[in-house]
Image (tube, rainbow, N blue to C red; front, top):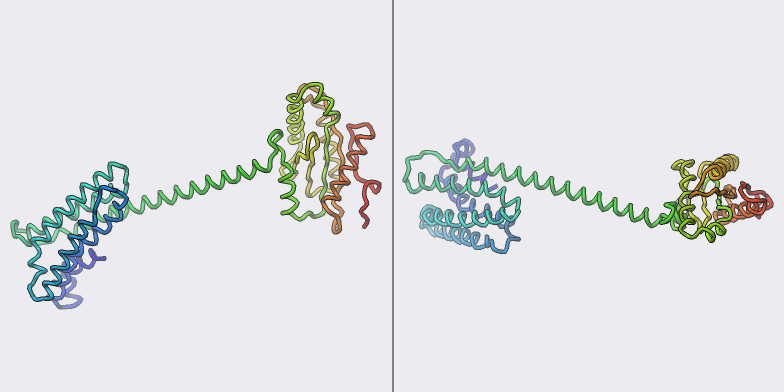
Length: 350
């Protein structure tokens, strides 16, 4: 803003707006003192984390000079012009020191300091050239070159925008990474470590968060004689059988079916969208798939109990109990069988 006002005051356009040369000259002189002061506030923000940089000293020098010039002008001593010798001395020394701090900060990885070097050097050099030619009359130069400082200043603005975009992109990427890690952690907390199936924690969350609607069925699967195999072959072999068993099941299931390890060798399959007939067909496919494959080098079978949701008035606990009773019937009738719930296994009445 200060630079824009100074540009307006130093151009000929101002007289077209308001034909008061003394006013425009006075405003140009005031903003000339404010230019390095306001610019150094920007550098202060860039360098404030660098312990060796003391931009407040430079700002203090600029401010004292500004107060003396304004105070002297108000007192009638024409100090806006009279303090120009000191102005260019403070400008050269103050900005020279600031450049040294910017260079050191840039070497330590401060991207904004590196970007600020260009306008700081540009403004300082151009301002000193105008001082040599306009104030000290050492060079016959009849125009201001300080307005050219808009170009290095534009470079700083573009660099700041670029760094801001990079920072936003980095924050978005970090947020995405955190969301992904959170999702992984949630997934891990809901998965059985051995088989990769969902666990009881997931089952409880599923029943809590999703309203069960008809049609809905569950299959309770149990590996036949697993304890006998586990005792005879060892727990490592038993773990291999559990993992192989779930892999066989998963090959036959789509993403809408949720396989839960209920405990030990028992697995619960949640089947939203399937009625009793369709659930029994799926269960038979699973039973045959297990029986037809070698798992961990052994031929194993499974028994399956099927229950369905009876609508309003039913409960998940009652449905699971009916599936457990059906599974018990399948195991009692010779194993390697699928049994669906019937009136014999339920106390539910329509």
